[in-house]
Image (tube, rainbow, N blue to C red; front, side, top):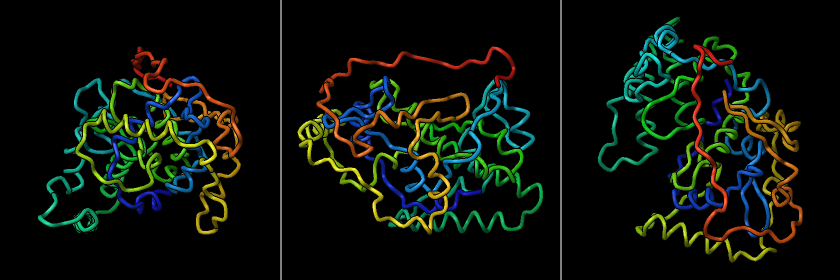
Length: 313
């Protein structure tokens, strides 16, 4: 299905201060980061190289249902929290995969914990076949897609991608990497009063960090100060020069989409990727950029999505 490289990524602890500082540099007028040295964004090329997810293929879109109760019971054997809802409690989903009670042991690192968790799950699932195996695979995919690829805040897991998992043979045809980027762009555009970012944060943070005990706001301010004082000429962005993509066929397959303005789809969310506007990402010179150094002059209005009909295509 193409999730193998993504599931083998190194574990990273989120640097919430850095992510919040970057979020406050996001300009929703052009869907890009606004830095003193110009506009930059993560692109489909970054998604392909970093995550290994497919960025070409069928758009991740379809039908949004008012109620997922029947679909959840039929495909997963799990009920949603309420009749007119698309959510299931994460703990129940983990329990269905026999990993709800697994917890860290004293002195156990994250890597050791994940190895043990994987072994326990495989031991429980190895005897299943046919419809039971398909049901557990869908449960696992729902957990991966909705808590990692299209990660959301809070505990419940959203069923919105369940219709795309009906036919397991077609799951690998979808552009999950493009959906990841659309979801991240949408999250970055939310109000700066909402701390943190829903979505796959390692795309914004490719290093481990030293935890600081200072307040979130103070650390964000220090990061802003550092960004404001970076000399213009010190920003060079040629991250993949000399890289060999022979071992990563998903990069080669995605190349026709890397240098284009394009619409990114993630179900009922469609956002533009203005590739030609991000001069610094393209390695081009950009004239002086005027931007608020402390308070954003823009704020995204509140929004909600409520289907009036039973289904919304």
